[in-house]
Amino acid sequence: MKRIFLFLVVNIAAVATLTIVATIVCGLLGVDLAAELGEGGYAPLLVFSFIFGMAGSVISLLMSKTLVKATMKCRTIDGTEGEAERWLVSTVEDLARRANIKTPEVAIYPGAANAFATGAFKNSALVAVSTDIMGQMTREELRGVLGHEISHVANGDMVTMGITQGVLNTFVIFFAHLLASVTVQLFQVAFGILASIVVMWYSRRREFAADAGSARLIGTPAPMIAALRRLGNLQPGVLPDSLKAFGISGKHASLFASHPSLDDRINALMNLPPDTGV
Image (cartoon, rainbow, N blue to C red; front, side, top):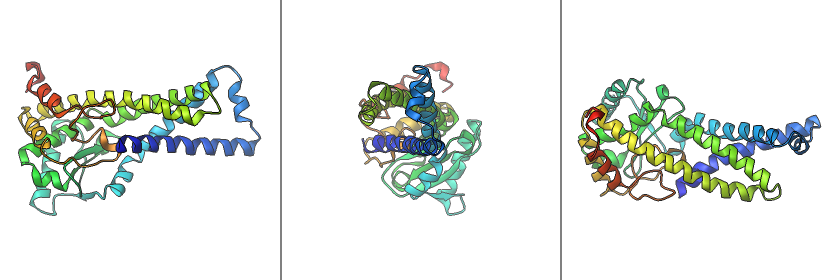
């Protein structure tokens, strides 16, 4: 819940900032924003909602790598730091080459077992692993995890999720203003919760796809299955909301969970159809 709340706050904060700026500018220009939105039926309000809803999501997406490096205390590596770092970078390079994307930045951050990918563009992404997951997983298991994160990047999941959130932001703003101008913030919270349920449902579907992508990249689902089983015995690391959907950990499924349960993911990998190329 903490990570979902943080993700929503980033989007809402961006939208709120843009709204304040628009109000100030309109005030300086002598434009009555409320009156302008009231003319022409619902169309102006829908356009307004779309611009600000998408802008908040796009701003969050573009700032994701910078914010993540600062908040997660990520240490970017190039492989010269030591043998473990060299293996990590070379593995990411190999998987990125197989996925036909540019090698993402590789980073290590302090914390419990987890990993994530972020970035607005698939050819300039960031893949990071925690110190605990490096110390507690075998290299074969960790390779499965890295294949999962590279699949997120190759599938463009960060952009897809950002656009999905932007569209839902649009309708959150639109219906909130439409239903009651006095209780706009109340409705934004209510519809924001509903929107997060939809986003998390979609995120769970993408997790299954990323697991299968890891199996395809490596040629076998075994490393990813082993990694998921290992995660079941580890204390998962906490990630911000903006990264939760692209991490690796998540033991229990719920309406607000970005990941399916580990058992469901393992079963899906074990039942991959033969035409997946593994």
